[in-house]
Image 1 (spheres, one colour):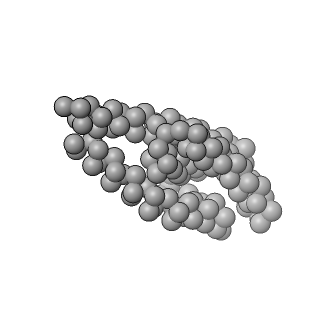
Image 2 (tube, helix red, strand yellow):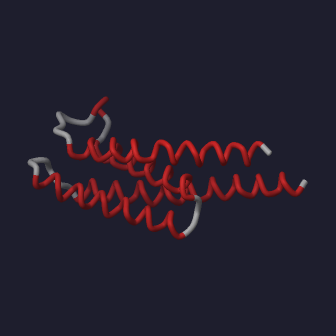
Amino acid sequence: MFAAKFLTFCTWSARLLLIPALALVIWGELAATGGAPLGLWDKLLHFIAYFGLAGMSLVALRPGRWALWTTAGLIAMGGALEIIQGMIGRDASWGDELANTLGAVIGCALGWGIVRLLERAAGSANRS
C-alpha cells in the first residue's frame, strides 16, 4: 500500500517540478558565470543537472518509450545549449556534453529501476 501511494506522490511531484527544473538548468547553462558555485567541478554540475532532469522525467512519465525519447531529447538539448554557449561568448565544451549525456543516461536507468521496483511492490501489496 505504501509503495503505491509513494509512487503516486513521486509521479505528481515530478510532473509539477519538471518544468521549473528544466528552466533552471537552461538558465544555468546560458547565464554568465564567474565559475562553479561552491567550488564544485563544472562537469559534476552538468552531470547532476541532467541526472536530475532525466530521473524526474522518468518518474513523471513512467518507464517506457516516452521516457526514452525524453532522455534522448535532454541529450540533444544539452548539445544545443553547448552550441548556443559558443555563440554568446561562453565556452562550449565536449566535456560538458559528455557529462550531460552520462547524467541523462544514468538518471534514466536508475529512475527506471526504482520506478519498476515500486511498481512491483505496489502490485504485490495489491495481490495480498
